[in-house]
Length: 573
Picture 1 (tube, rainbow, N blue to C red):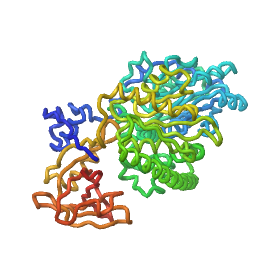
Picture 2: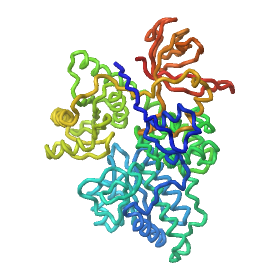
Picture 3: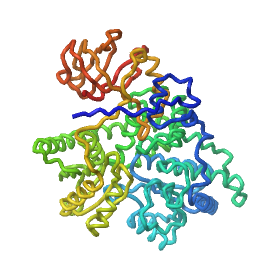
């Protein structure tokens, strides 16, 4: 069941934004925007790096390592945030003149997440002298200790919440450290890497110790395409700072002044880079980049982001597109299994306060996507597990949470009350990962449910949908649809406008058997509008001339060089 809650709107005028259409002012106010400065996305409005803890010392160490020709390895993560952060760090360090800059991303199936002891031993075999982690490392106490034992220096850059015991790294850059006064704790891993590199560049411009290093040719804004993609892909909260970074990257993508890899991804995804928005990054580009890390090795994705060869970029993008098709097929099969389990529990009224799912044939690279989907329609925290390896006694879980329930804090509580139950875990408010013994899954579920029941007085009954209310009939127009796109970037914590209203169905027909195209009429009979409903078949809608209550987004639909308004149906109420 879908339950609609309309967003509360402060009717005070948007200071400095009185020129904006009333509908857009209403949407902004519903998202806490009170002043036009909060939607000013000039780069000079970015939070300053001064308040980022550890950033100056980390920059000094990196310049020293590059100046002394040390062998530097960037240790990334196997998702799009990690891939973009890795590519960004490698590109810029090579550009300033560092002679030995390499990267390594642990294969999730062999090493798991982060700077593990085993990964450090592999780096030692490659004569690594200096490690920079990106999008990981804040929980890698054992790995950092091993690196220091072997004489390596370690700089950690991460955005995940820190544990009580920090690794003994030479420097740690993380906006979520306890002493941080940085204005945007929601930075993605690639955002942290970007900020650190701004410090490296500024320090290098006044550093005369290493004449072979130079920042003169470096313009960091040219890499904001990478920052935008990684930030959107990691589904971090789009606070003002993140929206500035994303909008700057999107502008470059729209003008085609980006790395060849992003243009190649647009090409294989069938999307027009000139019309790029955050949704394109989230649903068209990021899944194709992420697919490599989920099923195979993120090296394919990173090489795509590193190459300046257009033909090579196209070949790699095609490879990623093929891997993504495999991912979709695997996910669809897993989703069918999970849906069957959930439906039987709902039918028996046995849906628990937290849902834990497992199947021995599930793919550990895809369980996070599965958990996210199940969370959406059950409105419960969900953990989906898969075997760590064939015949392994260990399982790896990916957790996704609902608004108001901090999943990493919940895992901390479970771990504190039951030492040894969880082998390791990490994450943030809405998503986390963990490893435990297969035999411990039932007890883990019991303990997690207890934490949920203590934390949440009443779990939602069915799917809760936040709506921006009805759209005045005069605003149901192509012009307003484009203005809504331009009012972004939209994303997590700054959700794209979603409306609800009644319409009269004038026509409905199936598209590719599983979708429905509609022609809707406004209740005042003054307008008819085209609509599309993906994954809804025609019989789910009332018959012609009946009314229907739907949640929808307004889109600009382009076909044969003609643009028109189209409603994208998200929910039937």
